[in-house]
Length: 323
Image (cartoon, rainbow, N blue to C red; front, top):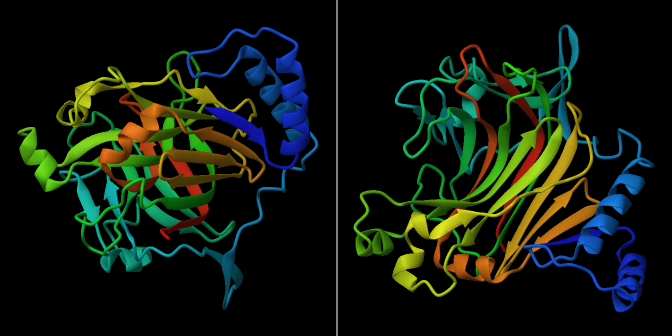
């Protein structure tokens, strides 16, 4: 993992090279020195303090005029997304039905417009869960072919997801701390051949990337191989993969807007925060992940089973692309 300030990266790299040349620095588990992390985080904090709250809040919305005046609608193309709700078995709505979400009685309580700020709201609480999960969600799942889960992408093929979002409401646990919410993911998927090879009954694979809203900060978690000598067949098993230590961006976003961009290419995964700072993953673990298919997810994957808990996530912009 490497952390860069995109607006000052050249000066920073020169300064860091000078310091590392003249100091012995202990390395972390991710291969970064403690000095790397200290300088990157200090620079991130100092630079962020000079940026106005509105710098990452500009979003593209559609303005519509009604008899009562103007109202704002999110400019988000849902043609390549399906949504899963925390009800039913659970319930999913695919294209083209999702395109009429504002008039869909099933979707309305969980997935709706806020015409005041031009956002698309995702509401979730503990109830129905998907397979392989104990948590509920109101979350979008990418569909490269609308209506189908069967066409996905590899890291060699690459992909990009960018969102402008906020987490305005989250319930508190018994200790008065906010519950966690996963707001973006890259999820793995087995091909049918891989599924049959290891004797699984579905195509589920682990998520390579989970991005959390965690007590007002953005936290990133990725997968790592437990045994770097694992065979191809062994790598297909979920048990072969563990969690890294994670990285929390040292900036309080609170309930305000922020921007996240995820860019994937062969052997690389980059997360860009507020269009200014880059967290790069290019280790052997990312390279070995290349055997899986993948799809993007975005929304409100709520991380609590507490009675009465809930969260709302707002997306003002959301786009995906594949070259």
